[in-house]
Length: 100
Image 1 (cartoon, one colour):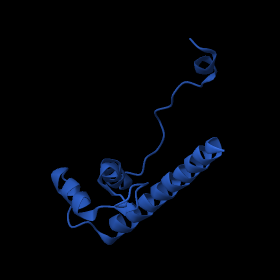
Image 2 (cartoon, rainbow, N blue to C red):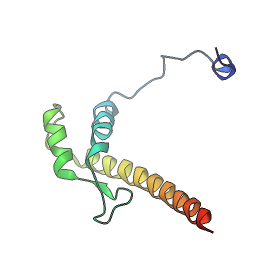
Image 3 (cartoon, rainbow, N blue to C red):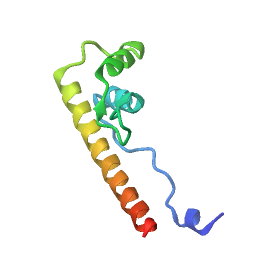
Image 4 (tube, rainbow, N blue to C red):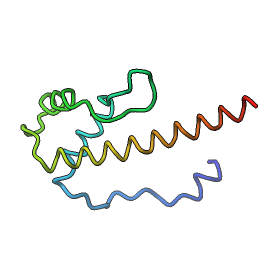
C-alpha cells in the first residue's frame, strides 16, 4: 500500500448521527444537482426550489417542507455557493496570471 494509506487510522463506524438530520441531509445531497446557475455561466447562485420540492416528493420526504428544513437547506446551499464562488475566483486569478 502507498505510504499515505498506511498512515491513516482505520475507519470508524460509531460516529453518532442525529436522526432528524439524516433525511434533510440526504435531500440536500440530492438537491446539489438542482442548483440555479446565472444565465451567463459561472458558479451556482442557489437552489431551484421547484426541483427541490419534486425531489422531496419523489424520495418520500415529508411534505410540505417545514420552515426549519427550508431554512437549513438555504443555509447549506448558501455555504456551498460561497465555497464554489471562492473557488471560481481563485481559478480566475490563476487563469489571469497565466495570460501575462
